[in-house]
Image (cartoon, rainbow, N blue to C red):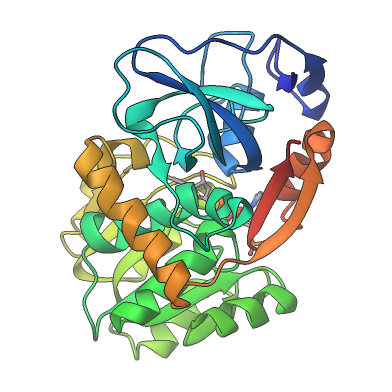
Amino acid sequence: MKAIRIHETGGLEKLVYEEISIPKPGPGQALVKIQAAGLNFIDIYFRTGLYKTALPFTPGNEAAGIVESVGPDVTEVKPGDRVAYAGVMGSYAQYSLVDAGQLVKLPDGISFQKAAAAMLQGMTAHYLTHSTYPLKAGETVLLHAAAGGVGLLLTQMARNIGATVIGTVSTEEKAELARNAGAHHVILYSQSDFEQEVKRITAGAGVDVVYDSVARATFDRSLNCLKRRGMMVLFGQSSGPVPPLDPNILNPRGSLYLTRPSMGHYTATREELLWRAGDVLKWIAAGSLKIRIHHVYPLSKAAQAQEALESRKTAGKVLLETM
Ligand SMILES: NC(=O)c1ccc[n+]([C@@H]2O[C@H](COP(=O)([O-])OP(=O)(O)OC[C@H]3O[C@@H](n4cnc5c(N)ncnc54)[C@H](OP(=O)(O)O)[C@@H]3O)[C@@H](O)[C@H]2O)c1
């Protein structure tokens, strides 16, 4: 089969398109014939070495496809099932081994592309709004990169809950997409100071929660946007990591809360995984959650796809077509 392999971490040239053998499922595993793989910013952290894993490896953390075969003791799926998954490395390939407990069966009417686009970013937006900070109608939220993969889904979920959504984006085209997704206020943080804008929009009150995945470029000013006892949810680092900080900075700004969550800790049980994936897929089928696919690249062009994502040229989801 064809796969992208990383033998050493570094630049885009480290994504090598290779022929490797199709693995065999062991106990509890399923072999998935991948139809579409989703790109996520975490793929870039692994490629550059910011996040560590054993070398060589096949990157990619999300896909949808068909169960080709299963190993012993698999009860969750059977050959022929249409499935999707997130948070398991190795999806930049035509086949991948996945623990069957990580697989979610797809309802009829959800395409492989939509499913591959929805799993990781959709479940992330779900846990952020339903568990990390359970957002309520009438509250106000600031979220950065509102036209990104997570951003467009987070905007829609926050809006559907009944919160007032303030989103930041870098360009006018992205602003239009964020507004269409339901953002009440959109700030071009590339052109104006988002802290001042948030204070103006909220008449000095600040927001209940900030969902910040941009990190280095936004973190400190995001803290200044919070209400007293508001919550800072730092869930990514697209502009680079936040430098080490003294927890005392949370006190003078109003006894703030700070958390640094990741999806794996919010989908750790099968019950929680099926709850979040089930909600996301149900909302897509019902039309209350829209998936925007920015572009689909062939597997062999994974480097081009990552280049687009890391250089802020994308809005919504980037996919790889593997067959
Ligand atoms: N913790 C978790 O569980 C979890 C799960 C999924 C994703 N994440 C995080 O969520 C973030 C979004 O992920 P995604 O896959 O949906 O990506 P994305 O939002 O589609 O792409 C990243 C966006 O970040 C913005 N950005 C700001 N400064 C940037 C910079 N210096 N370089 C690159 N981008 C910059 C850009 O939007 P503008 O052009 O509008 O600024 C860019 O489009 C990432 O930080 C990712 O690590 C975390």
